[in-house]
Length: 294
Image (cartoon, rainbow, N blue to C red; front, side):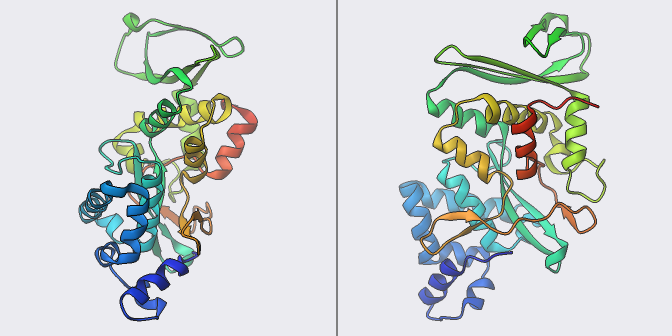
């Protein structure tokens, strides 16, 4: 994985040593205490920087899997959330910092930024372009009819027959009056999840897919809709391009995508983290829109 050599050099120098390897061996707590890292977060968050980094440290200390990830990758993932001004508490569902095991890099664990469906809604609201935006589960009995071509969706919340979720529907209306509705059956979502699951066992539920399947399913449908038909602010564009990527800092302190972790089920495994859309998948959705079972 590419390293943040510029930031590591600054950290080493601030500690009285020019050896980059020393910075590489520093703990997350030490890195967050270094003037170089503090300066970066303060430049983005100003007076909120201290609270954000404290929250980050507490979150990592409470997650043994994430605590084993390469510290610099945790920091750069957190920096993405900071630039989007989104909380990183996984219980809130706005953004996640997720550890992955890269078998091709000596079993090294690295962290990457992933956006939750609430994060997408938050960013869309900030843009001022959306009059209405929502995504929800559809339970058995609630769906009366759905026309994919005309997007006529007949929904009857009073018709719920059981707690079984049969699909997920997302909708937005822009300030200019443009409307869009996207509906995926649960089978479509499951096909999508299995196809893009980075665990060795493709069928296995992991991370947030295991603890909150509906939240991840809603995020998948919402991202598909917004990335293809929505108006994307600069913030939203950044969110789409950084979602589920490992980030590094260049010499100017700007975030950029590091070397991609290849999606190879025999070499790599997701560790206790939510699954999201990757770059290959985003390209697929831009080309095809909603996925239809074969």
